Length: 146
Length: 317
Image: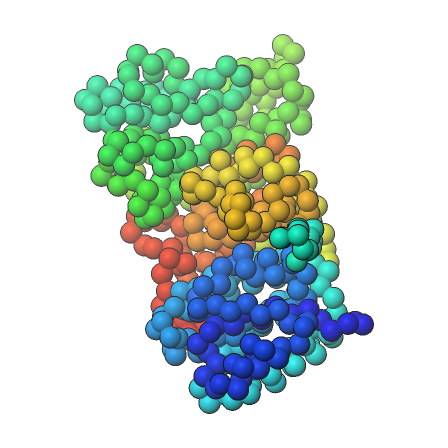
């Protein structure tokens, strides 16, 4: 792969307790990583994942709090069942399951997000560009192609 | 089969005469031959048109959600329809006390396309007797064993007997074999990734986005479907590859833990696209992971509507 793989990062806004980490994610992410901040990983609808894939992402990383340490107590558990099963379905029709990765961050895990992202980037670079599932045609939004 | 029809008719007559139900949903003879259509009986004098045979291919549970909840509905159900009704009751689409289900053990729905493929389209006078169906083609009577012309999803049927109906007409038939479904899912899964994607593309990209599968499905009752949203626009709404693939994936996924494998979507598809291989996979997963089958009773919530703190052991790596 000549350029860096495109990665969509879905991040729960409560999971990075350490301020420098959150600052890094908010301001210093490499341009190949697209950040989507969510109130909770429980907010993720399978459509978000599919939209990221069809929008051209080579890999998708979902970072959230440990299920028992969810800010909303049980928020992420309710959606986890769906996300897990949706990945099964994607795998069934031939999409590489390894392209979607969950990361559970704990209070102690300072600066782990950088490490996880670079690991994941290497993994996606190994897998190469995503070919399975057609990419959406670009739509002009506000006069710009996004 | 005409015996069943006579029984059904007298039963509906009784219900309508006693004003026990406001409307009875069943099938009637349609203008097009060999395609009985859903009918909504409110008076006993309409019952001359009543029809019930293997060609009745709609899932009648589809119409439950189109009535106000205080309407007393009577409905004739086969195995899959009774499960759909139960699943709709669980989702509070109609209260069970305002429903009256007449169950008929099902011998399977005859796929009219299979008959057309074998003899040609100018078929008239369908009739059936026990395990044999016969049609008249150009003045000549042709007979088939029923098994050969059954719809694919009926060949894989596991629960042909209605589940918790108010009254059962006819004798129960033997239950199906769940390993047939598992085999078809596993044989697809055994193919390599490229082949699976090629098959998925081949099926999905033939789609013309008529949404007949959505309209035929009893569980697709959202007033606004995700493909009809303008802002945010979730998927492409044209017949582009990305749009059709997204539609097929998400449509199937919305059925996870709710689909009763009636195959109404496949029978409704004008392009003859296979759809059940996706929902069958999800059903198998629901059964394996959560020991859940949709519509087996009218109280258990589907897995995605509920969650359990034990889940954290299952997912966290």
